[in-house]
Image 1 (tube, chains in turn blue, cyan):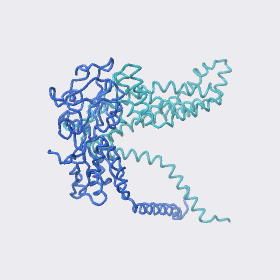
Image 2 (cartoon, chains in turn red, orange):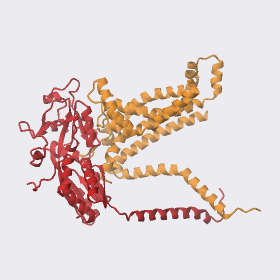
Image 3 (tube, chains in turn orange, green):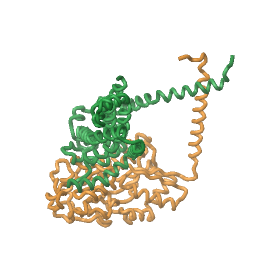
Image 4 (cartoon, chains in turn brown, yellow):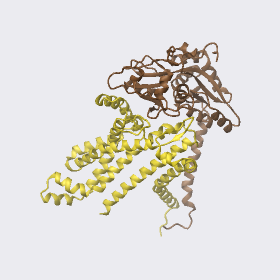
Amino acid sequence: MMRPPSSEPRWTAPALLIGALAASLSFGCWRSREPEKAIIQNTGSDTMVNLAQAWAEDYARVDPTVSVEVSGGGSATGIAALINGTVDIANCSRRLEPGEIEQAEKKHAGTKPREFLVGYDALLVYVNKANPLEQITLEQLADIYGEGGRTTKWSELGVKMPAGADEIICVSRQSNSGTYFYFREAVLGRGRDFKLGSRDMQGSKDVVELVSRTPGAIGYSGMGYRTPDVKTPRVARKAGDVAYAASVENTLSHLYPIARPLFMYTLGEPTGAVKKYMEWVLSDAGQRIVTQSGYVPLPKNPPAH
Amino acid sequence: MVTRPRSEVVAEAAIELVIRLCGISAIVFVFGIFFFVFREGSGFLFHGLSLRQFFGSIEWYPTSESHVRYGVLALIAGTASVTVLAMAIAVPFGIGAAIFISEFCGRRPREVLKITIELLAAIPSVVWGFIGLTVMNPLIIHLFHVPIGLNVLNGGLILALMSVPVIVSIGEDALKAVPDSYREAALALGVTRWQLVYRVLLPAAKNGLLAAALLGVGRAVGETMAVLMATGHAVKIPTSVMDSVRTLTATIAAELGEAAVGSNHYQVLFIIGILLFSITFVVNLVADLAVRGIRAR
């Protein structure tokens, strides 16, 4: 095609346009950097997302100048975002792994993530209402869920199910959720993997939902997701031991065998609004919300670990 | 001699440039996406990943502490089984609907049908997934007396419903493209309507109908959210339509968000992306060649 001898003017108009657009955009961003409200970004554990949301909503009344924005996605997502510097606080339903701490240090010139213990969660075993199961041991769970485990029928556990529901339908979580990691470590034992063929749900809520609609199903999720539509059998460490229900006392006294601490992480010692928020979360007012959300608050006197 | 104002010349050149950019942008984006996906996965693809394990093993343990395994055979089987079932349902229904709309239907019902079918295409896939999880799951358990309703049948039915609109609209276009002289000639020979469809229109439009079916396949292979929720998401080679499966797309959707950027797991998910890209590319290419086949006649 023919081009005019001087090609310069062809570029002027679009260049000006793009320049103007870019200028107005950056101006817009610069303006919004100066809000009246301080914004705290809070991402992570799916188990903790409802709890974090409840904190954020209540805190809006405590300090209206601060807005806490909460999203879920999973513990690893929160930590990745913390390491990448896109969030202020990461929620995590497991302790950070050494590799993750190392990554954070490498990326942020030696700054260690600061750990806050904010409450406890007992992992409940969920079964359908039609299931007469009242208690289960960790060994039985490992045999149902673990690689190489042989239990596939409810009748093998001595449970008489309604016709057609004898097959155990394992419901699990996607392979990088904090709940999945904790269950694998606490129930299957370190190094052991899950049996292939479990239904891997995206969220704690989906697990409970599926179990409530499927007679032969068994699942696990945080205690905050209990609904009246499912049953939660008591759990014993091994055959012959006493099985305990996941109450506040049993969780704090470690009698209930699959309970875990819940953490929040910041990059280094927090300052300003984030510091005040974390102090409030650990205060009596913040801990009351832990109870209201269905989890176990920190004991008044630090527990003997 | 009339000279145009300078501003007008500049404006015209600018508009021409913008339109040209729009024209080539599709190509740039497709290659850009392929390049990006390939770059993210290539490191592990060429150094470390055992292709024999990747394609030959059903063991998908991306976050194992003792023995990490990346076998996608079960995921390929999952995608294939759901897609095959979906097409077995959607192709006869879709082509049937296309024939009805194009040949047997009055003008008013045709408009109603077309709008309704387009509406079917407008339902978001997460809503389909929700229907699969909450409506179809108990229904399948109840009807077939199986332990769980999140399975190939559930996913296949939902994918079939999702790909029917694509098949109907492309199939109808293909039938419309058959010249009226064919119909007139056939009717002049005294054929019945059924004979007209079966003996004249279907052979004449077969390339277009094939393209419609293949685009439906592309839709089904690439669908993510609905199958993630409806198939049960279980790593398993299905032995019947009542088995839960997990598809390639659903695996990426479920795990990419939490895989550490640059890790082997992250790269394997991108390699699955390359695999999916290749599958849909081949399907679309064949569909395109089929359409070209009609035009060439």
